[in-house]
Figure 1: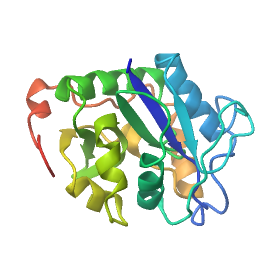
Figure 2: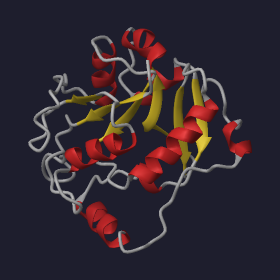
Figure 3: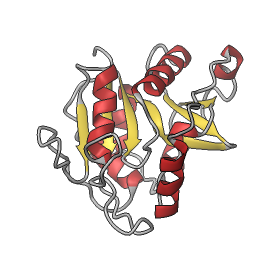
Figure 4: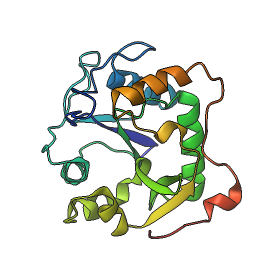
Length: 211
């Protein structure tokens, strides 16, 4: 299938933030969603992108798929049963994980691919003791079984599928849920340190298999 694709979640109402987040201006230009689509394309220029939810004004070429409006787990199951694009695995990205860069994405993909070379698992990070289903790579082979699951929460879906859980620093996986989170993100941009996934080979084996 030729590499990864991007599933970009843009359907959240942003109640804690005070409005829709996917169209907020990113400090590097464009909207939050448009910027993240650009991060993906910088690493995988031929990789397919599916916007799930609302469209991006700065990326009208990316035709969105309607989100049922019942949370990310229901949206993910909805998409899994209707995906018409081809990729070997899908990067499941919410539009509010703003800290991703092309370098951190490339690094995370290398780690995820090494942990799941046959693209048969949902590879997700464990940061600060918590599994992070979003920001992870979902094998395309899991879309059909995923679409048939009844779960209403992301971790309920993950519990029913083969997963690989890899230790990582929190950086890119931190969501910007509130205005205070955004202020912290903007303040942290002055820090040259960019947390990256744990590349210790031993960490790739910890937590391997179903969660």
